[in-house]
Length: 149
Image 1 (cartoon, rainbow, N blue to C red):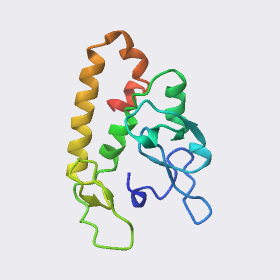
Image 2: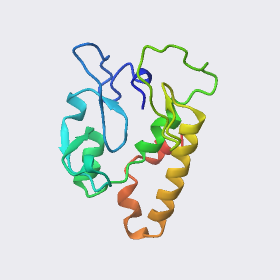
Image 3: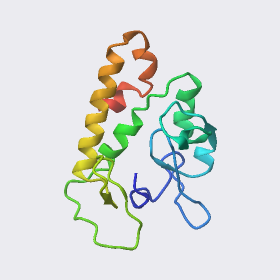
Image 4: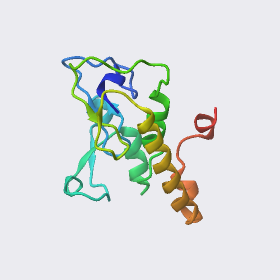
């Protein structure tokens, strides 16, 4: 999630500032303050950066403590933040981040490519979960009323 799309922490709704810094959860990818993302854990993900404990938000840590490393928040956050009517960002002041679509392109906002990548990843992950239905219920930790309003 690009920093510019989160003016406040989604965990406590405190506004980010010079003293309240942004931190990315390494499981769901959303941006949180230090208080809402103070946990560290080793994640079973590929890459040398995951060989050591990494920062995770409080919501994801609850899932990790249950042995659930599948986070629907990883997919839902880009979908919630996408604004198809927003004009493209023209300011060069913020550092661009990976667009999440595997293209290597950098962006300062959630693009249609990010949404497509999120939906594609969600589809693959849900399919693998459905193939192992014994753990499906434990992995869906977000209430249905949020998933389907």
